[in-house]
Length: 301
Image 1 (spheres, helix red, strand yellow):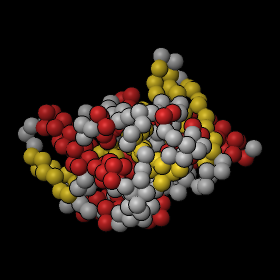
Image 2: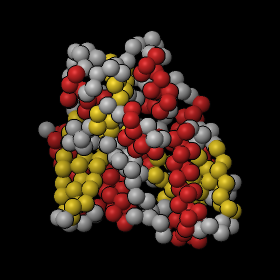
Image 3: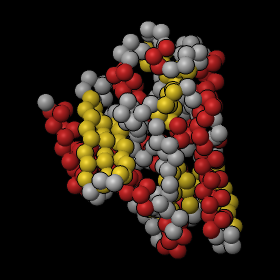
Image 4: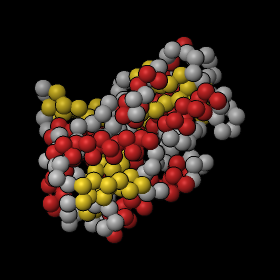
């Protein structure tokens, strides 16, 4: 069987796709695997902030169209970039083991957040990250930034597009680790300090719903615990009605007592920001609904 796999062309997207192919080759060496790079709307418009361009579909629409047409059989995305529901006719495979879900700081000179001077410039394109950072350091100046990981690190050292000298940037640990850039990290944020984006660190493996044989092959390599965690985090995103215009975070984990779901949601301008932590024996919609109810109660108060 020849399996054509669609992905964006960034270093991170290709690294993620090659990691998936390595696992598929190890499990199914009889198949032939081919990468097809697909340019998305989000790759073309690299100047405007993400929330000014449109929905999360800006990084996936063209890839999903290639799946629906049969041009490719699999698509690899970062799950955190995906809309809460795939297009009609498509399906996500069960999640494979995820990478480190935490957010991190890369600093130009300082060693940690506490060492930064008052009014330091920290760049991020995420409202979720911005508002949580300001909870830790209200004096920080948040700067917008776009681009892939290499571009953002270069802007940190050479200056942002508008000429601003940056003191630091916030990125996902998962992407840096997948690119073997872990040595660039100055500080990890704990999930208590900064709740990650829903399913951060998890890959989305997408395919046509009708392709039952391939779905069964991919699902055979999935991780049950990660699938349950992804269900909780993505379920919170869908139930609360989050989108790229709003700060929304979710982080779930399993312990001896069951599952814990940490969640964050707020207004677009950050004037109201609510967070909660709920626990239950199972990774269920009931747990998601409890988190959503607590968040809404806080925001109403």
